Image (cartoon, rainbow, N blue to C red; front, side):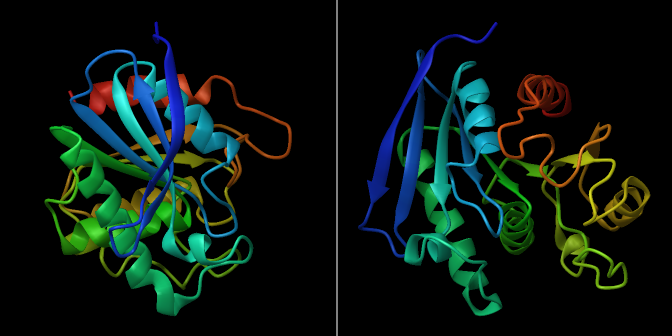
Length: 223
């Protein structure tokens, strides 16, 4: 059973890029940290991220739910490819913040674009995170299955837990399963039956059981 947790607005403007978002504080001493970020058209207030952050913080994680640098610059619109390196630098700074707070193990998680940038960052720096949780990894653009975003997969040596819907237009379950063979690290897919790219968090709908299920799979995978 998850214990009570709270969260507060967080900013560290001394870093470049700065880190901005919300810090979820567990009721007990936290030795594990989780950086959690959003998809291309969203922000750190996305209901999926809030639900996951509350669930993990409720069991002792210090969770930094943050906006990527491109989203800090403008409230709407997708990222430009030219800003992706800076977005990854923002993720690295978020991990640094949690380490400086005393987290001995830092995990990194993101939805869609945020998760993709986390995998690229981890492929460049295998020490950046103890593990990855990737929601709706955008394997390819919808209806463009040959434009795979897997170039960095052979260099990804960080254990990675993928959470993926069976009707996600960015990758079928078979496509994702095949692509994960390129990753030399341990991987696992948590399948969300009937889930699209939003994983049941679209509009006012909420897949209430998903965060707890992800937490349980996380514990099994990273035990």
